[in-house]
Length: 79
Image (cartoon, rainbow, N blue to C red; front, side, top):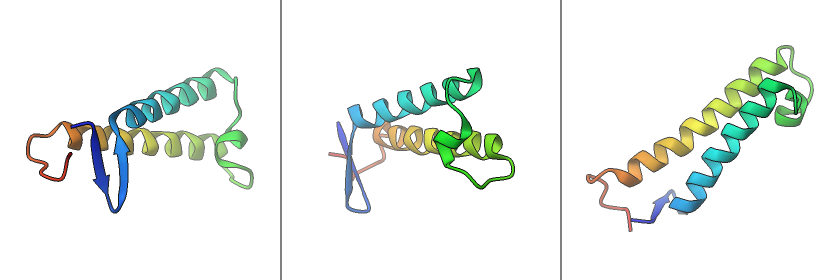
């Protein structure tokens, strides 16, 4: 159970875990000022910091959900 196929895209466990860690590092860098919201979501937003935090949170949730589905014993499509 090291891969999952979602809508034709195959994700490996290592890729999912690296994405989660990368987004968590990005969240920490945003919080301590190492990166700006502009680097995360671009320019043109009124509340760019809030938009960046929400975007990072959504991506973390997406990959953690993939990991949870992969770990689920009820998922027959997991290889």
